Every structure is written in structure tokens, then in C-alpha cells.
Image (cartoon, rainbow, N blue to C red):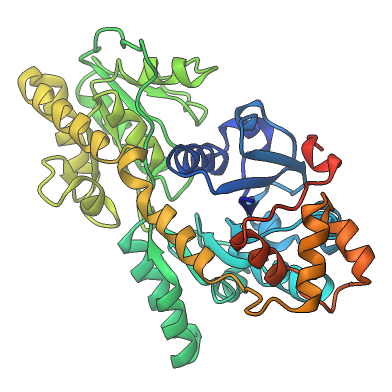
Length: 433
């Protein structure tokens, strides 16, 4: 009997769900976990079923969330969640929450209105801190409460972990801040190898790429102003935008990226990529995308970027003037560009998921070791074991035993698994919602 992991979502790009950064990341995480172990099954809550998750070991359940980031973090529908988990028929050994702001509520539902006692772990993709957002009110305290509801919570860089611990020290008691320090662990995001057969067209030596969102934290406005300045001195370059709508400038255009294959093909033609990130950027999947096809990037000297590319990276900049110097250096010096392109490929190779999945897998090992288990084979357990051997489902067992919320089921499930006894899934569990 596999350990069933409930994956709680973090959706910020609903209009193209398959391109949502959480969806892309968690798909790679799950794919590589399933490739290296056979004891996990994942139940995903998603606004709609996606073909990319139609794989063995993954089930999808419809679960709606608003996608405006702050609203999504503030919105928890208890009734919808109870309906989604269908606890009288389903069991969850681990909850893997990617939305800490909801995790305290999720834990309360499980502990108080179900008989499931899963172990809680998570991943925090985003924090509403001053470096990141100008919201008049934020969900940051809910985030910390959710982190404290988990045994472990991954973050994507040591820089981000230190930043959040600093805020925990400021807002929480000494003991609670220490608890946050103990829960947060660094789990670097990986990157996928380029698709088989993808050979980018020749590099355009005067093409710059900005493949980030048009937000303040990405430095979009700073980058636009820098390119305007560069245009006053030379008009031999173009800037390709892949996510943000391009500004109305003679040097700007949008790439037609209807698929990831097309996106990477366009990226691979760029001479140099730009990262103008400002006060907050805990990681950049977009930078890794470009590096995976050999695009060198000029990046800030601070934040997480020395951690990502190495403190000795030749293209770390201290502001937009440095950034433009690096851009011109790459455009005007093919030999130097070739050297930095080879280094970009090496960096991307060091972050492929095959080399980055172990900390995630080890977190699940620790969660499994922490599962509650019935220590003695009581008369009740022997009856449950007999029912399970005869093909009973969880609902069957609860009905025969007369159990409800007050008898925790997880400890029996763990004991059954340890004894090599399976519990049949409900038929409705085998069909996409």
C-alpha cells in the first residue's frame, strides 16, 4: 500500500494553467520522485484536470481557487476542501502543501473534522514581504502560521530562508522564531533537460531576451529604461519578450511561444539574457530556462544570484549601467559570449532535477518515519486487518467498526501497511473528478 500524498496547490496563472510556475515545478518534482521510488502516490487538487498529470501514480481532483495572488492566499473554503478530500472514503498519509497561508486551516480540518492524521510538509514558493509586494495588507503572518503547522517546509534558496527567518525574528516570540528556523529547509528548484531533438537556430548576436513577468520585482521598468538609454547610443539590437507584453519601443517585440518547445527555441537564439531583479527574487526559473539552451545572463550581484550561478560569475552586475556593459560585451565579443554560453550550460546542467531531487525525497522519508502507528495488535486491529484482507475499503471498515471522527484511522493504516496488508481504493478514487 503506497503512501498517499495530498498535494495542495498554489495557483497564480489560471488563464494558462499548464504554464503556471507552480504547476510546471510540481510536475517535475513528482515526475522525478516517481522515477526514483515506488512507495508514493500523489493526489493533486487543481482547478481543472491537466493532461500533463495523466501519469501512473497521480490522481487529480477538481478544487477551485482564485488566481489573483493575494486573494488566492486569503481564500480558504472549508466546505470545498472537505468535499475534495472525501475523508470517509480516502486516506492521506502526507499533506504536501505549496500554500503555507492555507496550511493551518488545512491542518485544523484534518485534525478536527476527519479521522485522518497525516504528516504535514510543504514548499513555500512566495512570501508577501516588503521586498516583494506593496500590498496595503498581506498574508505574511498566515504564512508563518502555516510554516509552523509543518514538520518541514522547503524554500528555494538560502538567501530566502535567511530573509524569512529575519522577519520571523522581528514578528514572533523567540521560541516561535526558532521553530520557523527549524522548519525551513533549502530545496533548490531544478531544471528540465532540453527536449530531445531540440537544436536552436543560430544565435542572433544582437538579440537580448527578457523572459520574465512585467512586475516591479523583476525590474521590468528598470530594464525598459536601460534599453531606452542603450538605444540613444546604438540602434543595432532588439529585445525579445516572452512573458510580458513588450513595451511600445522600436527595439522591442514579443516571441510567439505557444509551447515550451517553441519557447526554448526562441530563447536559444538570444545572445544574452537580462535579469534586472531588484529587492526580491528568491529564484528565477526563467533564468534557468535560458541557461539550459546556452544563453548567458547578466544578473544582480545580490539576492540569491551568487548562490545560483556562483560568486565568481563574470556577469554579476551592481545596477543597470553594469548590466548594459555586460550586454554590450556579449553582443560585441563573440569569443567571450561563447565562453559565457558554455558556463551557462554547465550551471544549468548542475541544476537538472536528477541532481536536485534528493532533498525532496529525503523529506518524504522523514515524513513517513513520523507517521503515527498502532504499536500493539489490539482486538480492534485484528478485526480491521481481517476486513482489509477480505477486500474492504476504508468506508467499509468504518461502517463495520462503527467508527467516526473520534477514532484516528491513520495509525491503523500505517500498521496495515507495515504488515503488508492493503486497503482497496473506492471506485470513485480511480476516476478524475
